[in-house]
Picture 1 (cartoon, one colour):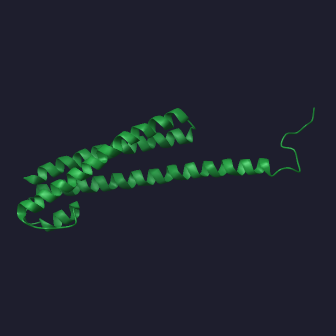
Picture 2 (cartoon, one colour):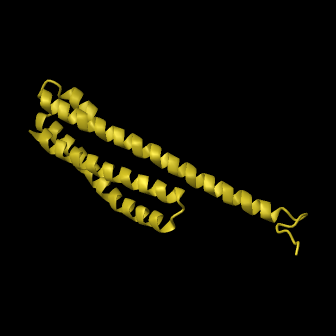
Picture 3 (tube, helix red, strand yellow):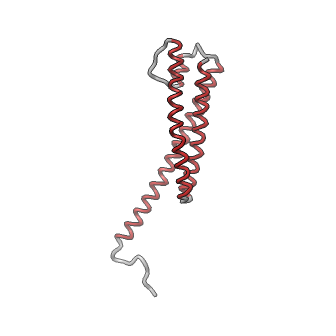
Length: 151
């Protein structure tokens, strides 16, 4: 049935999100170890994944649209949850379980990537704040010398 095509797209999306998660983990390691070259490499790697992710999202929506069109139903909500609810009686248990498990895996990966990206943003902001405070301390310390002038 048409759900096989959708399941294939979801599988590709899940695999791509797993790669994005690994890249985010590498990015965090590069941030913590202050490795600029590794950070640049992970950002470039991440940039390669994003167009493919957009492409898979478009394919997923088109696959869901095709399922709706083939049955004559209409919708504006192209989520897997809505599809499963709408076609509950038309799908076999295996199809429902397959789509639901892929949806859950994708949702879990997205949550993990989001959490990791939030942590990375915290690290970046913390570093910026530290640098700004250090610069301010140097600039605003006109009464006393930064370096001890003992010879």
